[in-house]
Each structure stands twice: as structure tokens, then as C-alpha cells.
Length: 455
Image (cartoon, rainbow, N blue to C red; front, side, top):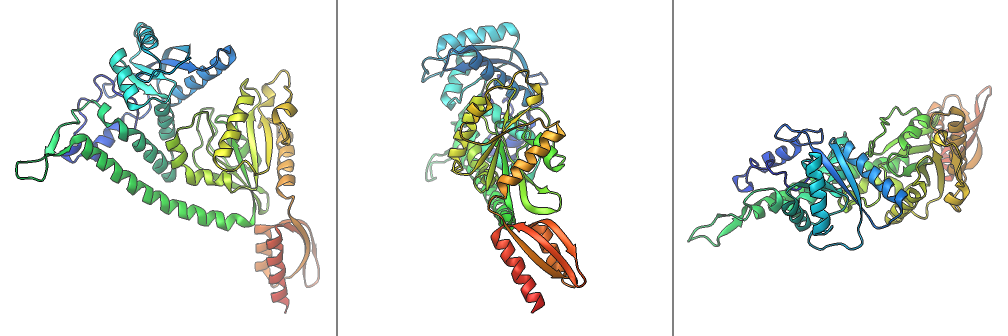
């Protein structure tokens, strides 16, 4: 569902909602998924207008590069770009008529057919901008939604993204290029003049969102049950700015084999793996990346996925140490953790991609009071040191116990390896002696099982 306001010829044949063809309308929106091709067979050629509140050149460059990465990730071609210091927001067009006209002239000269504005525009601002410039307008929120849709490879992610897209589309119904104020269904003897096409379409969208939320709730309940089952293990969650290398570290630490391509929001779903070789006393989870000004619709839709963050016992904050904006990315991550009410959870800062640095920055200053580790996902020894540090922090509250299990009670041995770490075993004549490390309630459960087995 490629979201931008109104390419000039793109919405000519979108069916009216009053014809009862909502599904066909949604299908046509989704047919314009990211991939460089619009409905008329031409490539989306984008001119980027990056907006800033600071005059610092390195900040402006970093934000422009981030916008470039997002637009390329949604599948479009960038023909040119410019940065603008926005001192005051215009209520009608956000950027002001002068800036809009200058950007439109530059975009026209570059051969663009779409203007991408790095701001969250209201529906009226997007319409005013397209009327003023003559270009299709795609704002920051639409770009991020497009990227999320392109990377939604599972049922849960697809549901979450579609909900966010429909919530974005609903207040923009009047901008899809149709006569949406036509009243339908009324007659002289009817109770009223009937609903406009936009009202009917809004009602269909509301119903679709409600249906999707019911299906997502079922998955959420299943996720909660799985997390409850995993409560016996120490749960460690990788968090951080998008494209910081979280999934690459996940693969290096657990051999998870997840897709770790170098593009924004490659990972949307939570994936969990045992961090230890013989079972689950420590579980490591990879989650969706953060970004500055993440749309509220996505925050709400990905509530169940982000719950993995707020329920973790340790957060591993991954930063791209080679990025000049690493400090800003850490600030954004900390702000997101506050939004998720997870700021109280112990943290380990991981400065990743250190192999790309010629000179090491003051990591201790950046990390502030949090413990930190420097690493490269391609350095096996560094990854082993990181694993040891995570395990040490995750197991701080674990208990050690010696347990004897008779040979005939093999089900207890399975329970031990599923939920505890075994540091020593000794085979005796009538059973096996274990030295266990695990959560106190786990150890108590195993001791109770062995007592019942021998009584």
C-alpha cells in the first residue's frame, strides 16, 4: 500500500466506496507497493526535501542520509535532494510557499515525479503542497509505512502494518483523487440524503481495522502465552537504532540464520533463540529497530512486538560505533525505552562495527553510567566476549544448587537442561549428580521433583 497523496494520473480508476468495492480499492493501493514502478508503468523519481531545526552541517547531512536510506528501502529512485533549515512551521504547507515553490522548480528540473518531504504532514498540508507544487507528495510517515510494508514477511507483521496504513489513510480519503463528497442512497422518501462516498469508505476502513485488531489480539494472546512459558529463563533483548547491526549480532551469538541485509527495518518481528548451547536458561531476542520520530500508528500497532522490550530482564543496546550520529542514536533509543516504560531495566551498551573505526571515540563518555562492550559481529573472539558479558549480567540473580537424579528419572534431566545451566556432572552407580545454575523458582521446582521421585 504505497502511500503518497495524489500522483496526478494515479488514482483515476480507483473504484468508489459506494459501489461496495473497498477490497478492490485496497488491492489497487497495495499494487503500488515499493518497487520503483507506479501504476502508469513509470518509475517513481523522487526529489527529497530534508528539513532541519539545527544549522549544524553534520546533523543535516546525517538526517538527509537517513531519508535517502528510507526512500531507497521503499524501492524508489532518488534524482536529487536538498536540505532546508526550518525556523518556523507554516500551518498551511508546513514548509512555507516560498520553500515549496523553490523545491518544486528544482524537482521539475531534475525530472522528478514525486516530492518527498521529511516531515509528518497533516492531510490538509499534503493537499495544499500538491496543489501548490503540482507534484505527488510523500511525507516521512508514508515512507516509513512503505518500508514496513515491504519488509512485513510474517502474518503478525502484515497485520500490524496494515492497521497502521489504514489509520494513516483514513483521514486522507479526500486526497485520493475522487469525488468523495457525492451523496449516495438518498431519496425524497428516505430518512436522509444518504452518506457521501468518503463517509462510506471511512466506515469500511473502520470495520476493516476492527477486524484486523481482533485477529492481532488472537496472535497477541498466543504471544503472551509463549512469553509466559519463557518466563523461567532470563530474557535478554537486543534494542537500538535501525541498521545498527542487531540482527548480525543475533546471528553471530546464536547462529539464528536471520536476514541481516544492510537496510532500514529489515527486522520487524521478534525472534528468540537460546543463548546457551544446551538450553534455555538465557534467551536472546531480536526486535524491530528504532528511529527518530517513529509514527504513533506504528508504535500502537507494534505494541505486542515491543512488549518483548518492556518484559526483558536485560536490554542490550546496540549502536553503530562507526556512525557519526551514534550519540544521537543512543539518545533516541533511550527516549523510546522511556515511551515503552522500560527505562528501569538494566542495560548493556554494545558499540558494534568497531572494525570500521580508525580512531576509537570516548565510549565511556557516550555510555555514561551503563556498562559497555566494543565488538564487531565479524570478530569471533569479540562475539565470545560479548556472549560472556551478557550471560554474566543475565545470571546475576541465579542460584547454584547440587542435585542428584536417579537414572530412571530421565524426565527430570530433560527439565534440568531445558531450564538451567549445568556446570558439572558426575555419573554415579545409581544416578547422576548435577551442579545447576538457574532462577530460584526453577531450582526449587527441580528439587521438589527429585524429592517426589525418591520418596
